[in-house]
Image 1: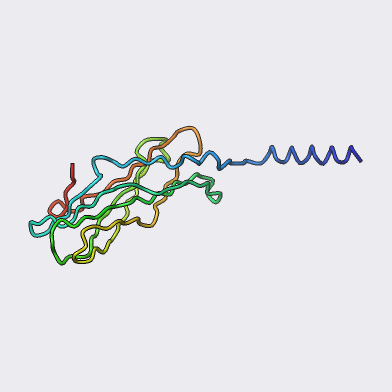
Image 2: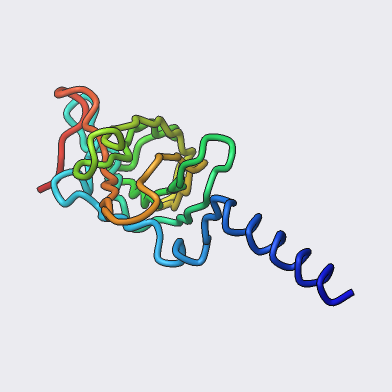
Length: 163
């Protein structure tokens, strides 16, 4: 009887050793996000007036192991602050932003562009917006990859970066 139990235990341990197991505990400090200082804020203008200032003020995020593709994924939602600069009747604020891995292993480098629309009612001075999250693949271990978040100035005559 002891022999059968010992053989079963040995077979079980051998099977466990064969499984490629990923420990999600290593994802606790993930994602490592930085707001790109050069692209932190933009001012939208029209007809010579500065209408809105849009700033990246933070982010929400987490990482998980996607078993379907056997990769670690970083999920990032930047937080934006929209400030009305002029008393106009314009209520819809449209802007684009990016989430990027600028350094790291070649197969993980990339930049994804996202678009957002925020309604700031007439008379409202500021609003905060957190869009649906964007997702990037990142290395599972070893090389830590910084994820950059920033705003795009869409058209030279209507948006400009705030330095």
